[in-house]
Image 1: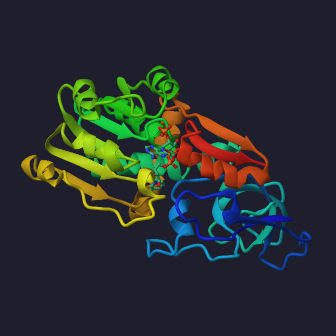
Image 2: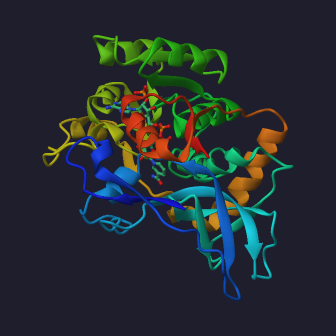
Length: 331
Ligand code: NDP
């Protein structure tokens, strides 16, 4: 069995030296109530960067020299737990290990006949829930309004934009390459896109792409991209603060926003959230997402990296935008 441990707390952008691989003999004897799991897909996510630091947050930091964990799809290879049988597939927060023993706690059975297994880490998992609940609960969308999404070609952003279109919004996406902008429009139905790497005047580009102003800003990246959006917000605009990947690797304490006057003069709302705040709405969100997916009203894309050994690289690559849609490692 191979395991990936957190060796160092990354300073700035994580590097391969922050991770350690260890190999030991596979444990195969399971006690009553336990399951033996073989890892099939591993989700790598920007939010894991926060858990690699020891700063206080909404979840405790990963421990040094202990396995890292994230969303995983695994196959049950042996079971002494009545809820699961050998051959079942499960999703849950599991260690970065090729095989592991679990008590079954927190695991959900997933059905490969209903959707590809990897989708349960993306559109039918935390990604879809975060997109749907952030947009609907905080964004309070009304048909005809304008939505701007940052990190638009990523896992969450690409779902937010599509849901925006389903709800009758004008949708503008911000992403880092021309290929991504093209995909936002051709595959996901966005009305307009802005490449922040090649656009010199971001406030002007946003004003042009959102001629009626911005009613909802779904923010995955923070930093200067978000500051640029503030110049175009409408009265009673809602800023949904989902993430801030552009500052996760900063080594100095962030400085405050200087765009607050735009909130005041527009009576705008800016609210951060953690998807688990809306846990009681997960079943309803899942039903809606599954229905749209079955009706082909929603689609998704993935960047699939092969091989357990490439998990740390896939994670680091998120900070360089090497993924389009959900970044997943397939074993
Ligand atoms: P993504 O699939 O969006 O991957 C990250 C993307 O961020 C990259 O593809 C890249 O795209 C972009 N990016 C990287 N560095 C920068 C930068 N410096 N400036 C601007 N864009 C950058 O990841 P997820 O969809 O999983 O997550 C999106 C956000 O949502 C993250 O901030 C994450 O932490 C947050 N999140 C929040 C949750 C919550 O409950 N609130 C739950 C889960 C995630 P590009 O090429 O366009 O630069």
